[in-house]
Length: 359
Ligand code: NAD
Ligand code: DAU
Image (tube, rainbow, N blue to C red; front, side):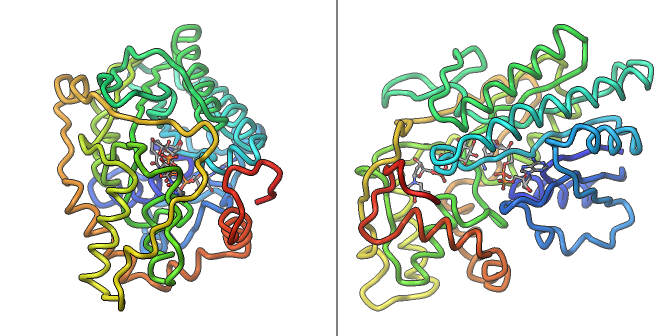
């Protein structure tokens, strides 16, 4: 039995689907179903007897302990987090509560379970983290290696950095067999449409402006979500306790490049009179916006034999096709909460960097 947290979110739900398709081992998903968590993401596997679900908030230490004690997992994969940088700028508190205290609660329960199982060497706690903990690169800096100093710049990345440090400490102090992965920007099916790629697809289809922060020259490295999930399986299976593994797609793109590629694909798949490009609009920048992320994947490739399979063009096309084919899913996730965020953040004439604006 493995325990996954945050399995109703974007990456977690893709991971669970892949796990149940490929592995003959049951899984329990602990998720609070926040605005970003959607049970419908796993509708197709609800009846799979190997799948169990517990609606639990990581901030509730007793409930977390009860789930871990009941299922006695051999491994914990920790995806659950508040994950959206723009929200962290406007309302940082939830990020500290979930990402820092929630991770502490999970580590505490995992340590207890590991000890009760007699401290087996094979036990694993895999912490799914982000490249954002390393801060920002200039256009000419070498890509992030696992030795890059931590320099988080947003409330989100600071809270993830804090959680990484807790995980590290639980290994060095208590011997818990932990693994940490730091990954770049994921994209693909089931991503909540507040993140760049699905947001732009949805706004383009609605004929709304495509708000690119600043001049659009900020660079991200993009990884198709299934490749990330496969990397996590490899890290879980072959990773060395105490190690950190950087994961990335070797696909650096400026935001403007990404949005232009999307508009080109949409124009082929669902032509719009006048095209979609005319909808692109540069808007005030995200406060503290990191310039560039890039991942040096040599360590995971050389040590564990993992390489990304899906190129950016192919992955982007699959993603656009998925959003076009799954209109009902999109309509369903556009909850009142989602609409409130979009209305507050992208209201006509409002600045995305205005800290007085409520989401
Ligand atoms: P997401 O926002 O789509 O999903 C987060 C999930 O966690 C949701 O199902 C939500 O309900 C759950 N959750 C949130 N707070 C909770 C709480 N207090 N208790 C229990 N469950 C809670 O996130 P994602 O994009 O799937 O990211 C998953 C993990 O991967 C995060 O830890 C994130 O930091 C990391 N990561 C994401 C990316 C990316 O590009 N999306 C890249 C690198 C790393
Ligand atoms: O690097 C990994 C991280 O990638 C993960 O840890 C985060 O959970 C995930 O959300 C993502 O963070 P980003 O801030 O890079 O993702 P986002 O989709 O919010 O933005 C991607 C880039 O696009 C970023 O440079 C900001 C820009 N952007 C974003 C939005 C939402 C825009 O220009 N306009 C927008 O409306």
